[in-house]
Length: 310
Ligand SMILES: Cc1cc2nc3c(=O)[nH]c(=O)nc-3n(C[C@H](O)[C@H](O)[C@H](O)COP(=O)(O)O)c2cc1C
Image (tube, rainbow, N blue to C red):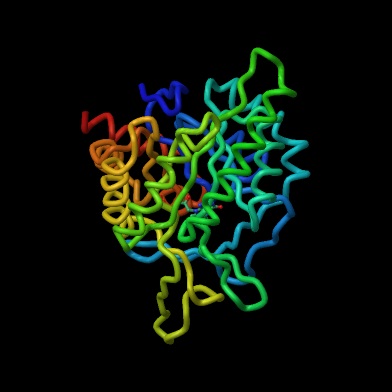
């Protein structure tokens, strides 16, 4: 058993954001071995994402530059009730990952998702692959003013949901997902901000670390970038020590009331064990699933290996 923000989980493993966007995919994951289903990241407007080749698997890493493709909030307003029904009937919570381009957009999306009944909300403050007119968007979690504004407006939006949902339902709590920080002082400053925000009644309750390492590059034998937009987010086994280091630092920096989800290179049971030892309450995996071309049996395989480690 594991618990995350007061929600009981059968075990600590779930899919990571970027692996499940449609009702069909929610069904596939609800029937798989994951303890919770993570859908998203979703944005207010539908997004096509980047074109061309956007995913590459190397020996010890993957690169992706998907750029948040998703059908947009209207689709999710319609489909979230069914997504919740499918997940809940499998005895699992549904976590919705949301992304946005300003604090108001995050707040509107969080409000809609909370009204629909999501169990937890993960704010993706860490997507490296969003380009606008040839310029890369700032990764929100590296700017504490942006993080403060997004968390503040989302907290306010979730507090108002309480007035409209049935009395027997509580609005979901939220947490933030971050990019890997190579500057320990920068990570400490963010942790200080989260600590203050978490003292508010509707403040962040968990941190998910980490999203992909931004702007990595791999070349083909012909010296061409393997990803068409060139620079891309690095994930998979090579990211695991980086992610573990972030979790270990965050566990020391944050109060126990702020829980941690580890993500980065969970491909086997050892990965789960390592993240739990570093201080995570739960773990997520994306690349292991992508590399099996959407075969959700990968989660059962990781769990079987985890059981062997206990
Ligand atoms: C193809 C792909 C798409 C992703 N899309 C998202 C996303 O939409 N939102 C998000 O928060 N993270 C996204 N991620 C990051 C993963 O959720 C995860 O944080 C990261 O890949 C590290 O875990 P892994 O090594 O198990 O893949 C994506 C990762 C991959 C590989």
